[in-house]
Length: 332
Image (cartoon, rainbow, N blue to C red):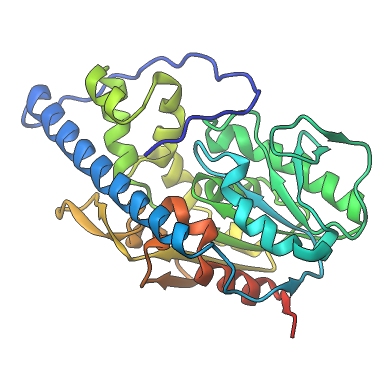
């Protein structure tokens, strides 16, 4: 359910747990319900992930999609616990045969690297480079801390390539970081795709927030959670979430700061729901109705195991949505 970060970066500072308001049924009953739902969500998510991995083992990802030529830089923005290798299949396909600069460039604090582990710094980046991956200081940082890092990355890509605009794909919590950056000005952003982004929050995160705040050790261990995850869970939680309420109140302004914005997600798997029904359709982590926001195109995909949240970046239909939206020209 959660991939431990493996980047050589510093860990977030310890976070104090905030008190949870008493529940109508009493804290013990509310805790039991939260833990039960979290355990069920975890089992379902792991099952969906295993099915996706089995599918991709038999069908190498993205080998059934066209090779493309990209006119301007494109940057992937990772989500909670997302390591650079999450985008490996996409990077390989976009740069196959020397296309689009021939390799991906990983960017952190305005510095470029040839590898996602940040061990091979680069002094220069060729002007024909097109494929970039954002690497945050730490994979657990919430959008309020990651959004400012995007400003440095986009400015560096503009300078290196000479491009006025950079297209951006925000994946999962990375989509919220992208939206916070847009909310703060969004200089240099062209088109934006939000992939599997809980724009209205995630029930999984709401449950995780509670067990961390209540210090329910066995549930935290089961979901592989620590106190360091709490700031991200507070940003991602469904229900009473002041972060998302504030961000969503300026949604139209965020859209106006892009050339175009599109939302892509899944309705393939049973997903924890913040409504009266425990499970609804989604990608196993983000329910479909949490994706949607007013006034923009929303594409909901169905039909394959790779439409599970963790596998979305490597799904072929997601790739086709990217190619069409960003205007990547397919090679004949």
